[in-house]
Length: 299
Image (cartoon, rainbow, N blue to C red; front, top):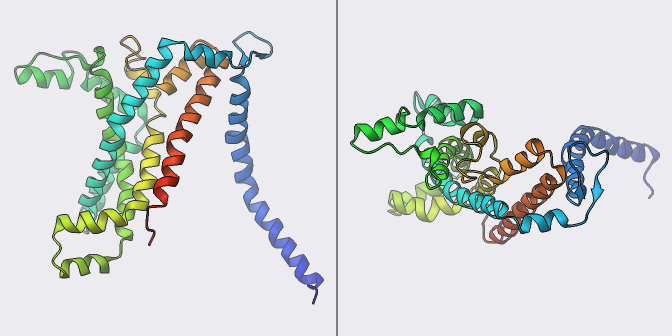
């Protein structure tokens, strides 16, 4: 039996209504995501600086020039080192905070808000606050060292300490944000499973190790991807606190892109660096996501 004209009309109306609802999001995605990506891919193959009327196609010369640049490799090393300093510590601290606030109580809402608040503070305010803490001699950190009988360190002026100092600030800010996701995962765990483990004699550590952590695996996979990509998107605190000093020791990849695009006005090189960053994020995140996803049990 062929569908009636009324049913066909109703189906078409539902399809058009669906596309109408999707259209605003599709337009935003095309304008602010898809187009910039393809525009960056094109500009990465061109020579395009301030004052030029149109980009000049030069193929892969920008990438070759970056490959031979010692500054580029130093920036890449800084970025990877910063990721190692921040991703796992921020996840561990976020999980600890989530375990701490995963309970009921009179003031638990205030405590959760206090832990989460740094993640919504303007980065300018955060960087200015930590810049005061790390200020040479008169800053809170150096004053604390001197009160304990140590010499002031001036951590932002030494290449060995500048990235660890900035990593501490980042972990402090990011852990509250990751806490929210871990808390959501903890509250989604079936309490009957935990009660059964308690009846069987499982201690707090064994329950956490063999029940809570495995059931948090989907949440942890998502959070690890978020934490890794977020640590690559740092530029404003570098601008405020160090501007890449000393001698590019604190220059991270996104700040280097900013330098090339908005300081040197070299849009071709800036676009090439953007393509490299996107490729790096995809190279690390996507294979890891699909490989670990097969090992995770979703309840």
